[in-house]
Length: 364
Ligand SMILES: C[S@@+](CC[C@H](N)C(=O)[O-])C[C@H]1O[C@@H](n2cnc3c(N)ncnc32)[C@H](O)[C@@H]1O
Image 1 (cartoon, rainbow, N blue to C red):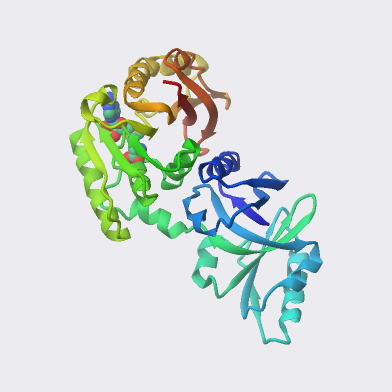
Image 2: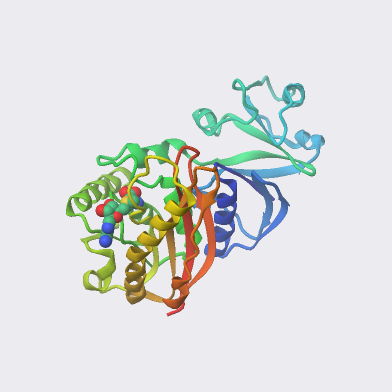
């Protein structure tokens, strides 16, 4: 039995997790569903696939239920304790002391806790991992106790973002989201295209996942930046595969690529940056205007996608002046033979434009 702990945007991360199980043909069954984590059984080991998830922070092996399960822990000289779903300093100390006492016969041990948090942040665990064990307590309807097996590496995600030679801070998509969007496509392998690739964040992720990677952008200077980033990535991560990058208008993809694609994963042009939170009528007008651009783009997608190909596309939604979110319903997608399979939002509290991520199937 396993558990995964979700990072920010747990709703999207959970949807990613289930898409990921379908993508890799895993038969997983939920045992306990909580907002921020999921306990599940799986027909196969998933340790070797965990790094392909963008929205999960930790993979935990569940050892047992209830406090007594700590008696099953294997000795470790150093350990940390992570609580999820309960902030109880006294209980935290009690558990730590009990584990320490249990370990006494085998040797001395030490445990530690960072200030103000009850679950060890990945950065700290990674410093000592795996020698320093992270024992986890998930307080839901019942208490599940386990040990952290894998941790998403925040240093690697940071390197993929700010460590590369060419960056565009505001316009780039976070690498974790690129990873999430690939899983949402549920396509395990094949030809993957980002037709608004910018400096290449999503194309980087295609390559890291061993997919046939294609990227294009209308701006030759930006495409040159993507080329530099891909060159850097291949060297840093020792990748043999290369990406096919073309200067191309996303409305005319069939002129640039002879390939047919299994999936298109992209964050397109989302309109000009907003200086204030818009009113509902302003938001409706902006979304409608942008649809005039997206419509021919989807007509172009239809020409280069395989039948049943998937599109994971970020449409803009807007945080309004009254705090509500405006999401446009795009009926024209159906007319072009695209079926909307799912929609998820993703945004930072300070953002005015909200990502309205659509997962679509091209009926062809
Ligand atoms: C939001 S950015 C994409 C950012 C990208 N995901 C990244 O991480 O760098 C949108 C990109 O779309 C490109 N673009 C705008 N209109 C285009 C068009 N008609 N065809 C192709 N690319 C276009 C812009 O040059 C810009 O690089």
